[in-house]
Image 1 (tube, helix red, strand yellow):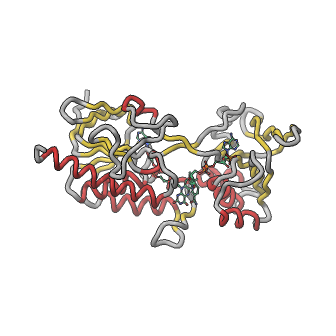
Image 2: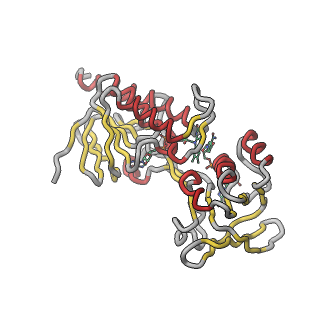
Image 3: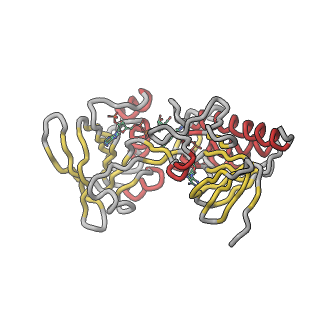
Length: 313
Ligand code: FAD
Ligand code: NAP
């Protein structure tokens, strides 16, 4: 059994929120660690072009992740790999964070676990993951050079990633279940100008079909006319929204009924010493800029909490 490692603050998740919290906490001389089940950077690693982050007209998501990581570790914050399975609140204001790579203990914990893609839940979706079904255009577009792909969804992700796909694959067909897009107007306008992007409205993908090895088509249902049809596609990119990564923290009872974390303006949850930041929160705008704002505040609040404990208040 490995020894429990002691810190002042443990940050769960090393996306923009977690990395910014690490910058603030470690610059305030807290012994700080970020734990992430993947590579640092979070959703930025799945974003081709970021055009709405101040200071850059355009920067690649993974490049921004590298820059943030360099900032977040410059004052001594550590990063380690590990999937957090639970957080236990101990009697003496300490929290124990359990991971598949060992246990970590600290008085302050910042939950910055973001969110993940909602699955469509249709036949073929799970079977063809990695064989044509994808949630990441940046990761998988190149597999479909010269072919046609389907995109499901009508929000920012579907349209923005559809634009990225259109530069790589032969043609992109975006299936929208309603009669309009939810995406920002600037993205809609860009997509409408692309010769190889087509929108199909009022249409739901009801199954994903293939030959066992790769996707070949999707079944469609037009919810206005009631017509069913089949559409040939080599890949299916699903962008129908996000759900919070909070299942592992259900015992803490810090979320609303949909699983998003509730915190006050200092990022304090209802459990003293447990803070939250970024997309995982109940909030209106889930963006890199808002995640880093939350992260800075959470890092500072963790400092206030730990200093007060150390001063015996
Ligand atoms: P995330 O970036 O999601 O990071 C959370 C981290 O927590 C992840 O690294 C994850 O591995 C880790 N984690 C989760 N659970 C655990 C666990 N149990 N144990 C350990 N680690 C865990 N925003 C913009 O501002 N501009 C854009 O152009 C833009 N484009 C986007 C494109 C797409 C396709 C998507 C999906 C989002 C885009 N966004 C964009 C939104 C932006 O990426 C997010 O708002 C931002 O990344 C949220 O940061 P975060 O740190 O809160 O969470
Ligand atoms: P989203 O904004 O929640 O949009 C989800 C879309 O999927 C909606 O069009 C919704 O349709 C549709 N949908 C939901 N369930 C469906 C189903 N079962 N079948 C078919 N369609 C379904 O999600 P998102 O686009 O992933 O964006 C998530 C967050 O990231 C947002 O806050 C967004 O602003 C942000 N983001 C920002 C950028 C950027 O700033 N450039 C880029 C990407 C993402 P209805 O409209 O009918 O509900």
